[in-house]
Image (cartoon, rainbow, N blue to C red):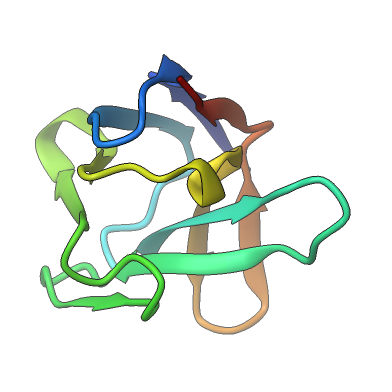
Length: 116
């Protein structure tokens, strides 16, 4: 199995930046895609960004141009650089690992609060 641990969340002012990290361990496949999603209270989970094993990325419109996903395969770590944060970005952020369509793992999440 795969274990994922998110870190880097916290309180930040609007317009500020945070970088989230996702450390993966266990039976990690080099073919897996990584992603970040978030869930705000009372709302559905929203997929924000994905990065394939080869480095190609996709972003949700809500974060496009502000967030950047990256990965360091040597460190088994995936990052989400978040810039120009807005109060609407307040949510629990989750890292996910996906191999094919039926093997998915999620971390426990890290809370990001954007408030003045």
